[in-house]
Image (cartoon, rainbow, N blue to C red):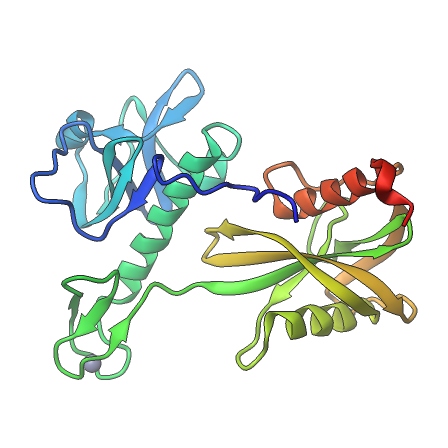
Amino acid sequence: MRESMWPYDPDEFESLVTPPAGANHDDAWYFPYIDQQILCVSEHGSVRPIDADAFRWLQIEVDAEIYLGHYRGRSCFAVAARGSSQEGFALMDLRGWLGRVDASLFYLAGRAKQLVDWHLDHAFCGRCGAAMEDHPQDRARTCGRCSLISYPRLSPSIIVLIRRGQDMLLARNARWPTGMFSTLAGFVEPGESIEQTVHREVMEEVGLKVTRLRYLGSQSWPFPNSLMLGFHADYAGGEILCQEREISEARWFPHDDLPDVPPGTAISRWLIDAFIEDQRSPAANH
Ligand SMILES: [Zn+2]
């Protein structure tokens, strides 16, 4: 298996629900979200989080502050807020951070976004309608009346590159405006194993059978709360039959003659690059 796309580094980020005793927030970073958009410092085309000093003077209304833990020694907070942008700041879609900040910082901002969304969506109990409050220890919201506990929701999905000899299968999604081709993907259904999802999605989308599934890695994708699990699988049989309204075209491509594919920040590209690397390595002719 290849190294993870995003290796775990406990020295870089530690996830905490409550600040440790005596924690100092003087150089904290704040990630305020207003209507799904992140408010950040914007200077000469670069972006960065808002520090404690700037946050203190921001003219916004804060509905909730959620402690995230510390990142490179700084306390970090996700903030549910109302208001508008101000001079020196930008209010933008988090996708605009991709490629403009360190990957780890993008994922931290994505973590903040998902926790803000979850917090706002769980102001009231989904079962009895009473007000929810923060759980004292866990990252959770609890109902004081019926004791329902709500944890932040994730939606697991699979993404798979199908290999046939020296070719890979790539497809064009019917909803994409451009001519870009990518790997197949879909959400896990209740009651399914991840492996069953891979087989079902491949059959539904292109009518093929696959075998020898290999898990390569995962990617968190905060739009809105996906966790994508990436696989390679070998072609096992069938003729390509594209799912109507979902897939407009699917074809086999040799590793050295690719169409437009997603950028390097996407796990699909990582799966494609892993296949190319395998084909070019001396051990490829197995
Ligand atoms: Zn309740």
